[in-house]
Image (cartoon, rainbow, N blue to C red; front, side, top):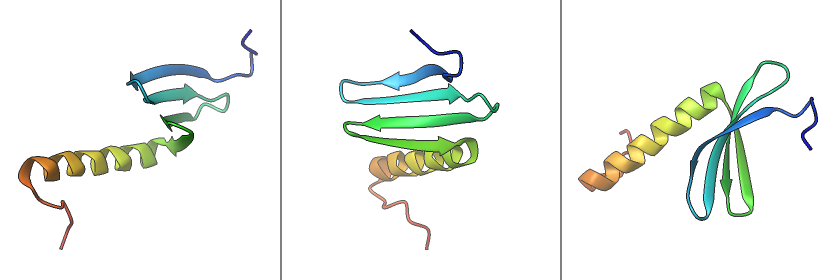
Length: 71
């Protein structure tokens, strides 16, 4: 049974081994979370946006064969 102080959560994406979800915290802050097997990473909005930028660079690098590093 959920406690009234528990954050409201919503799954963003999920695979067999990984999950991303957001949580509306009681203080009004939204946190973004990645469950990667037995590791969970927690991000505030600004950190999440930067992580997504990194993921896009990784994807772009994979498509072009580039490392995606700024020089």
